[in-house]
Amino acid sequence: MKYIEEFQDPELARRLLDDIHATVTRPWALMEVCGGQTHTIIRHGIDQLLPDLVELIHGPGCPVCVTPLEVIDKALEIASRPEVIFCSFGDMLRVPGTGRDLFQVRSEGGDVRVVYSPLDALNIAQQNPRREVVFFGIGFETTAPPNAMTVYQAKKLGIPNFSLLVSHVRVPPAIEAIMRSPSCRVQGFLAAGHVCSVMGTGEYPELAERHRVPIVVTGFEPLDILEGVRRAVYQLERGEHTVDNAYARAVRPEGNPAALAMLRDVFEVTDRAWRGIGTIPDSGWRLSDRYREYDAEHRFQVSGINTREPAACRSGEVLQGLIKPHECEAFGTLCTPRSPLGATMVSSEGACAAYYLYRRLELTPAPKAGTAAPLEASPVV
Ligand code: SF4
Image (cartoon, rainbow, N blue to C red; front, side):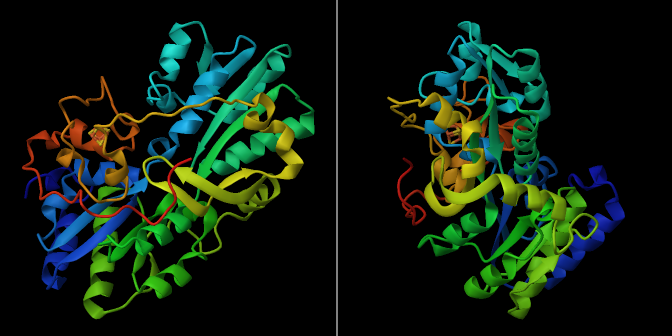
């Protein structure tokens, strides 16, 4: 079978696939929540190995992709200031804001530095007491604990010239918003295993029950994805809708208590805008009042931001699973990784980048789904 010899254990992969093929009797649509899972699926051709009756819909779980344009533009404005050293993980530097990106700010003289940990940014702050050091804290429940710990350390060590530009998002409210959308076709979820390794699985049974969807906590290796699909399809065929942990080697039901305690201390839940999707209630974190002095938005009071998305970019529909990347007219023509129109073409977890990188340009466009209504959420502010 195409691709299958590249799997870590081709024999096990064959058995899992045989089981899925033998189980499926009707069409099912599953959403993999995480962009890392999307890349595994496209890289290993898992969607092409599955029965035609099983469709994988790519979800919004790419942290770079969903960071709102307004926050990107604020980052660009703050990074342009002469007193600022702006620190970020490398994948944010090429994300297009309104008209430019962080690389461009750096080429124009801005002090933009790539770091590998938020603690690196804190060290830079200690070494440069006359400069303001800002770390771009984005991401899901996985990157939030180290960012929380860095702010905690800044306060504990009394480092006043460090701050965090926060745009953290949470997965369960996004699942809720997806299921409430009138255009939703998702019948089961492969939940992101790394998120659950931090947060546990406690938020999912209610979601599974309310929307009558199986939620299978799934890892990131090709065999993990096959096992997640196998378990989800089993439930769907039997009319079940429970939470099933298929990533038990990393996920405990209670999550990581130390990380959770840090999150509870430093952050509080807030409504959050998702790029291309809109505002989802309770879907993000912001610094709590105790740590407000370390909030870069509060410290720099950026105003006059006028965001403008490229009209041709349909990344919002890609992120909601309403279209596949190659159905966007700009895919591979106006929009490539070298000249991206949207963040989903830049990020290492973006669906458009996965389709481009793994040569899905040749795919025949599927029927247009662009008439479907977006999620029930207010416009991005
Ligand atoms: S291919 Fe490019 S323009 Fe189209 S949705 Fe993806 S990022 Fe946007």
